[in-house]
Image 1 (cartoon, rainbow, N blue to C red):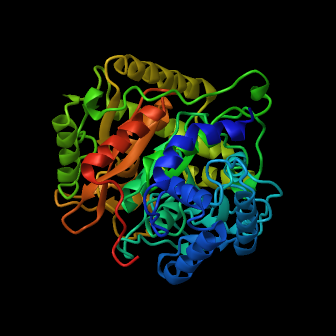
Image 2: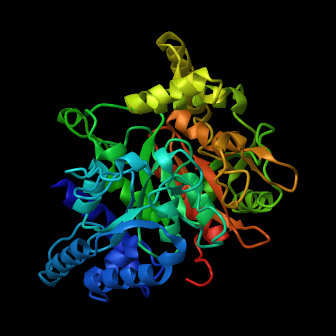
Length: 502
């Protein structure tokens, strides 16, 4: 059995269930779209044309897309329709229009990471993750916008401009996968591919009211996901960053993980990977830990009621609920190690020119918070790395008697655009301002530091109608557990709902 056939077989029950209900061509799930195409309810060409029509209607104000691939997409859609007519056994996302973050190399297309100097950088090959989605039958319709070097919880750059949140165009869709979250929330695609080194999948999911999954470290290949689309040597791990799916349903996330996950050469000579089954399939069977906030990063009263209501819904469903961090865990300490390693990674991957510029800035006293990581010696770096592994072990001991851990994604809902210097930014809350970098990175950093999987799920709205998400941290290598929990929670809280006017 081939990888493609195996994935198709594993997802057949979900597809069959989806085919029994009317398909929403604007906001349906990716699996529902695939089922409708298989059943002949809509052709891939019709659906792809419909999505491009929505892009024409809405993207002028959202500005999610940096390029579109109309000719290539429609050509593949025609091939899928011909395969449907021949009654072929199709892979899981056959004929479904999808988007990818511009951080991923796509053959013949720009991969700038928002860096003006890379405006004409055109990779010759697809990133591994992009190719796996294409092999799953997906129809790639284009790439979505990113912040410069993927280093912001907002999405803007001098090449492609600013991406706006469909819920409120004056606000950020999140970052750095903000273009992808905005496109999916506005019904301009059925599945997305993002990256996450500091909440870059989960923050945008929270801001736009969709689902996003930050996988366990190194399950999904990052080859070809680099400035200019360059393909690093196989086996490289950034120890912090991952690639993962974004969608409007958790079933799409799980199937996407089956498509995206797994080793690549040369590791694949000896190693294979499978997605372990979720620990439970009923909400009442889960053992759930949670916090509503940590003193390090207070949570705005505008979003706390939605998070509290989600926890209450879990408890009412019969789940065992336990409040508080694991024993001996400190968010402040964890974040200090994370921030050092994050900045060491960013500096190590920068171009020689950028490194020289950064060194000059640091020598002049700028960006002191980042300098400690960027200019760290190896022995000191290794001490932080060893503590990273110790904290992973701490969480694994905790997950021996708890199945998932709930916490905020961000301390605020989608916030107004602010293109000032990041170091001087603050996030406004009724309780007072929060320092920008700490506020946007602190809660997501737990999963990035430990390598554990984490799913962001919509759980409600603010009093002004902005989406609110919750973060579901799961045990290392058990990605299906937080995804499954997110789907069960959505049955209680409502899950995705489209923004008004789309």
